[in-house]
View 1: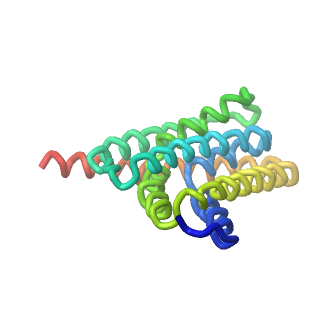
View 2 (view 1 turned 180 degrees about the vertical axis):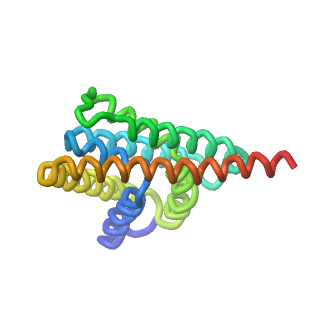
Length: 199
């Protein structure tokens, strides 16, 4: 086991930001919800973090024995379809939409569990980091993701309060585009893999 050092602590935090920060469905959901409530946006982020914790446990327990490549066509197709539906729902959503706070957490958890990009990160970067540095950096990975989720939610809420309807339109367009792009890419990959497997 590597010696615990400030470098490993910082590495874990940066690793968490690298997992949470890239544009994707979870950030699109956080940005969309933050227009109405920082708490609801943060709950979505915590739901996605719970999915990350589940993936961490799976990777920690099974390690390099994991081989889900045979399921890639289904993971990509199902995930892509879900994101296309989310794009449609986001586009159709009203600006005065109300919601139950707990639902945000479950939405984040559900999308996180079914997100091919998130699964891929844990089976590549997550697994190799675990094998090289052990479990310690992952304690601080969740510090990094928490900092990202709270900061993003707060900044979007400030933008909503300052720019009002312009911010609403921008967020809706951005969120819809992210869901649609990721959905299209994952669907393409899934269908391509399915068709190549039939040859």
